[in-house]
Length: 279
Image (cartoon, rainbow, N blue to C red; front, side, top):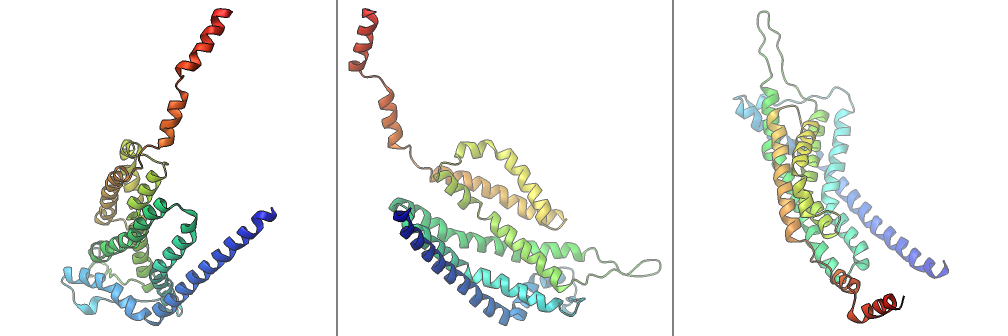
């Protein structure tokens, strides 16, 4: 215990230093995003404006409300936390890699680093898909449910709350961003020997069902948005199978040595046969 006390304390000190960097990066990103919360929210409203244009409506029809005095303030705090997490993610990922890198072999560090770089790129691709396609289609569907009032007909207008719109777009961005990490996660599991490309291919039908169930839970209840998440998820699963086959580690040489050790040698068989004849 005395021999392991010093290394344990060194690991804890190193972990504390990495966590301080992560928290500091998040707080810096939070302050910066909170300072520009209103422009960020206006940028997130652009997909809604596209949906309004598709309906032939004017810019004056883009209206948001908040029903509690503190609602928009807390919405700005959520924007700050969301932006802080996005801005600090490269720093957090780097600190995580620097913490675990000393415990990895050189070939393991070389294999892990490309996936670390691919993670934010895939997340941004998923977020871009939400921003440029999913949100405009979803808002177009919701705007199509409006109803013009008249004799015996109620007037139904779409007046979204700022907090609900932000929650919708943040949920979709995180959902698509996590789904786009599927190739990275399954490839790393394959390299670790926890899954095999053949096993992933055999479970393809279950993956398709899970993709549509997840899309039904995470997205609004319109078919286009659900297909917008389910179809990329299935394609990413197929890409994961290809990547798992591409980066699958070769059979270990130690396994071959163990098989050779299990085979009886000619010199070892003679004493056994001699014992059997003597008996």
